[in-house]
Image (cartoon, rainbow, N blue to C red; front, side):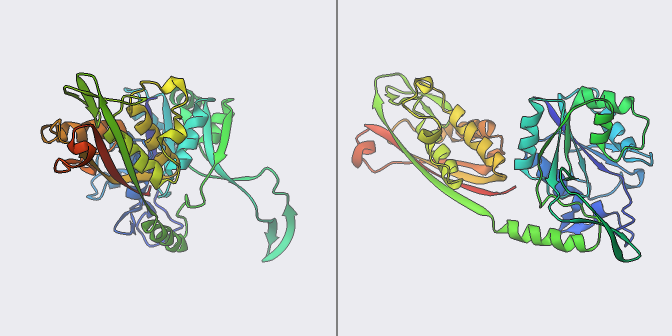
Length: 377
């Protein structure tokens, strides 16, 4: 599914005070807006449109790699419409519209939106209101309100692109957010679970909370190890880390027996404490007979995103006498990077022999071990 994100960041942030718009204020060494861009990209939304105030287009700290759009309209809807227009040429299937003052849109929350869009024209994250609600006058409680069915709305709000474009084009204005625009056009909008960390920076004290969130995430690191072995059998090639290598033997296995990819997949599942390949793809199930191992690895990475993590790096070691791995290391790293949707610099593949000792030394099979490090997205 072709996806894109729009971040509206043209506001001046008058309630925050201090003269600097909140999306440009420093938060742990980079602007608030940069945190939002990083979070959306970590969730798989690589195409990002930034809708900025004209005065901000020349800033040196604009997050790189984004489509930049200027807006002079006074309303939020003006910014959204400018962002939607910027995507007209590529016409994505879905679009995620986010506030630049929300630095922490979690990957798991965005995955919930993604799943909801498979079933309807729009979806938005929200948190159910759990506190009692009062009305007040002159510093005193003047009444109460029922909280049943009330939610605190968050962003990104996600829509089918053509549907939200049409909704905005026909709206008279004055909407508080894009959900109201969509509902006024007759679209049904699903509610998905929001995230307490997905706060909107509105008041000066919100920055202290944002720094606490970041401090807690700095320690949210998970590591997993994987190990796999496959014996040789008759054949003319082996699959190792997604690369087909000519050889005078093949590897025996229920799937394509890519021992390196299997070890890496198990390392990722292990970091998530979600078992191993056999847990998710039982060898007793005939549909996985001869399956290509990239299916398993992609699923593991989908689970990483769904749980709100991203891959920091991984390391795969292949143990064999033959075939020689050195000439193919880069191709293996590139193949794994493409499957996993990460940069090749995050992936290491290396090889060793066992000095003619053991089953690998006797060339009876190949073993592999892998380590994967995950960090909170």
